[in-house]
Amino acid sequence: MSVLKVIQAKLEFMTDAERQIGQFIVDDPDRMVQLSSAELAAATGRSQSSVVKFSQKIGYDGYQQLKLAVTKAKAQEWRVPSGMIHGTIDAGDNFVTIQQKLVASKVSAMQQTMEVNAEDAVSAAVSALASARRIHLAGIGASSLVARDFSYKLLKLGLVALMDRDPHVQMANAASLNNRDVLFAISHSGSTNETIRLAELAKKGGATVVTLTGLHGNRLSQIADITLHTVADEERVRSSAITSRDAQLAICDLVFLLLIAKIPGANDAIHASEAAVSVLKS
Image (cartoon, rainbow, N blue to C red):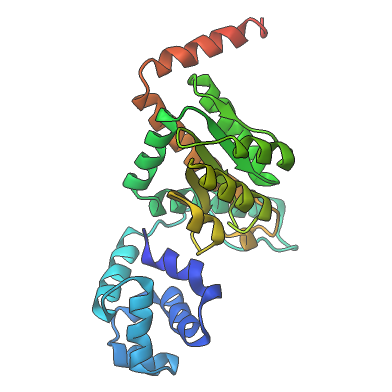
């Protein structure tokens, strides 16, 4: 997981001193890796001990380890393909510019989302879903659309997947989950009250809770047994759940493809589903 993405996601939850150090690193990582802890402290107007404490809060033993992580993150950083524009969509942008910015934002969100999800976490989610007696999909608003799409895919594999847009029905379903079941909860903010309550209820019953949330710390991911993450900058398109929805769909599709590889007879089940539907298209 890119340390730059981690810092960016946690900025709004940091103290003033931490935020100033973190913002400097995010804005100019190339310069940061050239500075000592004392020099970074001077550049940000903070103490050297604040820089060391910041490094530890992000999860490193000290500043040198943080510098190495930033260097690695820069080396692996995904860049917008040549010819595409990645930036905030402005009211005065013309048609072609809006097209390019929108596509670049979507591609960036999906690429970065793939980068921050470790293979072991995704594999754990796949194993939990594959062995579940029942799978309950949870999501409110735009996340419910992603949850419903994912439930259709799981049903094609012969898995028992439940999804209802009504929060009351979702709560009723979650109340019956036990240690043989999985709750797959989707919320980019991780702070949607209905989804948090569903996760708490499922956890209480003993179900495995898998969450798909933003990278920042949030209540929903704290409840989870398995955490997956999305990266999306909604400010770049100034609209509701455009890039986060694409990021969510990308991870769900990845899990679906891995399930096909894991579950015996999954390809046959999909072909049978397609054959059943094909008669309605003739």
